[in-house]
Every structure is written in structure tokens, then in C-alpha cells.
Length: 217
Image (cartoon, rainbow, N blue to C red; front, side):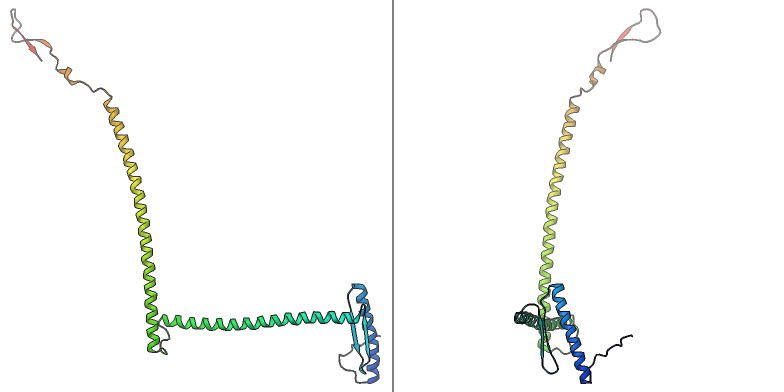
């Protein structure tokens, strides 16, 4: 026989309700005992009948179990209270941060020249002063960067000048060495070509008693 599914609602018949209470109470006490034995758990079970009769089970001392529960519940309440306080603090800080972000967004739009219709003359003057201060700071920063770049270029120029001087000095030494080596080679003396050479020059027909004129060259 298949057991029907019991609906989870109050049993209207008093007799059936009492019988069901007795059966399920005994089953609940049995399960509590099994849990304490099998799992070595500290179990405390308290049941009051519809007529107010007390049924309880504890594998140690019910009073100690209740005190332990109270201490645990107190710690949990303290922790929950601390968490709740932290949550309230976080919510407050989040709301304040949202207001600051909104204010910064409005200020940003005004600095960009947007949504100026609701601004008074004093507010517009403040925005203008703020822009002038910002522009002054930007120009100072720009000038500083330019000066740093100029100093860097001057340093590079100095380094290149030193390298150029070293290269020129090195090239000058090589040129002097080359000229010195050329001087050590004996040059060809052209004066030997003009040495006196005695030759005989015959003028006229070759006859006896011809006159010879010595020539010098």
C-alpha cells in the first residue's frame, strides 16, 4: 500500500493531531540521539506539546548546552551589529562620495562653458578666476618643460663638441705623422741633370782641319 503524501498544514482533528504529535516526537527524539552518537555532536532538543508538556533530549547537560547557545547567539548578535554598523557607515560614505562626484561633474561642465544659464555674476567671476589660475599653472609647467628640454639640448651640444674636438685632434695627429713620414723619403735631385758635358760640334762640311768648338751644356 502506497503511503499518501501528507500536506503540511495543521491537523484539524484533535485525536489525529495528538497521535501524530506522539509519533513524530518519538521519531524526532530518536533522530537527535542518533545524530549525537553517530556524529559526536552536542545536541539539545526541547519540545512542548500543544497542552504545554515539556519533552527534552540532551546528550550532555541541557543547561550547559543552553548556555553555550546563548554565548554563541550573543557573539553572533555582536558580529551582526558590527556588520550592520559598518553597512550604515559604508552607505553614508557612499552617499557622500556620490554627492562629491555630482558636484565635480557640475563644476567640470561649468569650466567647459556648459550649463552656465543658472550661474550668477559672482559664480561666473569665480569660474573665470579659476580658469586664469589654471592657465597660469599650465603656462608655468610648460615653461619649465621647455627649460628642461633646452638644458638637455645644451648638454648634448657640449658632448658633441667634445667628441668633435677629440676627432679633430686625432685627425691632426695622423696628418702630422703622414707629413713626418714623407720628409724621411730622400727627394730626387734635379741639379744632376745640369752637369757639364763636353761635346764636339762640327760646323760645315767634314774636311780636314775643321774647327771644333767645344760646347757646354
